[in-house]
Image 1 (cartoon, rainbow, N blue to C red):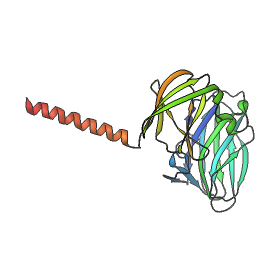
Image 2 (spheres, one colour):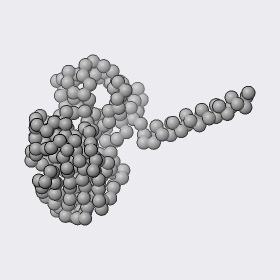
Image 3 (cartoon, rainbow, N blue to C red):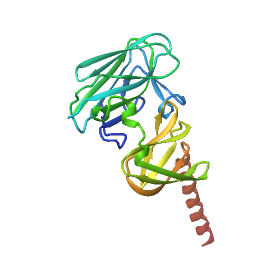
Image 4 (cartoon, rainbow, N blue to C red):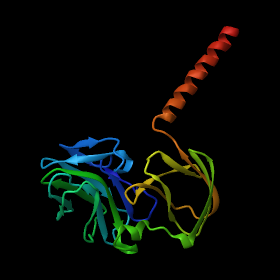
Length: 245
């Protein structure tokens, strides 16, 4: 079992990726699928199980579970078990992903979460959120245009300069097809993008005030490759210096 900290910097909101934040039994991982957040999802069947332990920082409010799934073949039932309670969702077959929303649930400091299904089902991600700000995901992730102003300049196809004026945290939506390698850097912190409206990039920014920052696209493996080139360059430089001596 895993003990997780909040993935997002939103108070009382936890984002769990199916392929990384759950212990799985008898499942398959789907890679590089644009419909899914981070390009991956988990395929379940009637022998599968997904489970995790979530650290809840504030147990005072009730929470809802939002689960992003797809049932491609036939109607399927997903059973969500939280601290001994069971919640069943019937998912009709569809080629599109859909959100399942649980009723409000009171959680413990360390909450045990398990999912099972009676058929073929693809699970993408789970959002656990406090109902204090609303009952729906749009209440939690909805933009606050009155409280944030953003201007930007395009430096290149993979690099933007952002000027921000914000009086409270906000969601910034980047109108490009979702790609998990966009990042925003604020005071040395890397803010990862999340999937918005099933296909757009979005960033939840909790830094308030007036400031400038950058949004950059870093292809997977590029940073590792860059370090390798740097290392080889250093070795060659040392070799050349030794030969010259």
